[in-house]
Length: 146
Image (tube, rainbow, N blue to C red):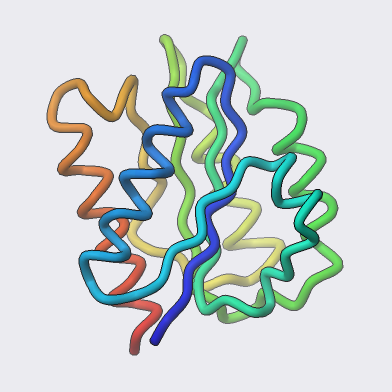
């Protein structure tokens, strides 16, 4: 069974909600999903190499990703993530750059096998956000289970 690790950084819990719904989509496809904040990832000393998929999410705040996610991106360089399935997501108020920057880092620096593109939402509950988040999780699980 494929396993996915979802790590998020949030300000107002919108990105946390998206992370949980992406995890739900992964589980609907029969894969395992572990959803943790950046802080819990560090406390639990989880190893992303133990998972077939890694999904990272951050809110965009003043055009930037949350600092804890930026720090985590540097820390993840020490792991061998090449070829693992990846995805990125995040909530935003008006600009939404963070998920794209995370996606590009995962694809170009870590050399991960990324899903179609980043998932960028104002909220998981607006404009079909729940379905889009679940579908994103399903896509990750399908790719990781191959």
